[in-house]
Length: 260
Image 1: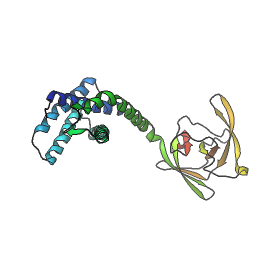
Image 2: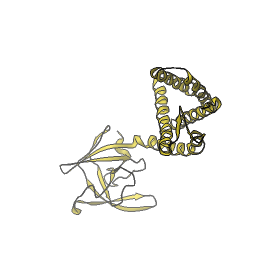
Image 3: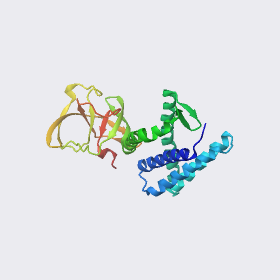
Image 4: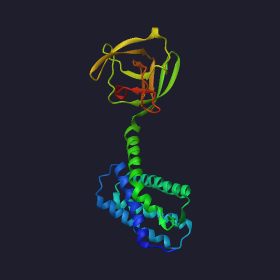
């Protein structure tokens, strides 16, 4: 089989450039495009070291060293935490790309020669790189940014009510400023199917939402414990029939619960 070194170089440069670009976007690094290109070029040139005869351990160490140099070229070195975060995201992103290539190889029975998959002489890597990469990049970046932006707002919550403990997953909605206008107690929103309380124990609290005023059924709970934050009393539970449109979330927390 003929090996075209220029093709291997361009292929490797393309992947390394995309990987570094994704890391830069997700971690919001203020990096010039020239530095990303230089990091990709170093990664592309390093493909030629694979033709050097080495055992598995030596090859593994070499790949780690190449990754470290790529990261320093692209993002520079500020401190160990900054470096390790770049390193971890680079490898996690590369695993996703490598996983898709492996999937294509297994699914469509392409032949593999080293780092390149072939079918009738055509490298599937180029098809993947040119056509599928932008789509996969968009999906990956969007999901990663969503998790990165919202993960810090997820909390484990324990509600203590009538000698019962409800273990819930809570989400801090910074737009939730609901309070009882009379007592000033914050209101947590929970679907009434979770807290099955008798109707005679409800009381109505007037609330203001965008453009309208309404009433919400509330109950007084004994205590709320937000894991990692602390416990608070004097909190109302607002019961709603509307299902919370967030996967895995049981209650919407109020901003003031995390203050003080």
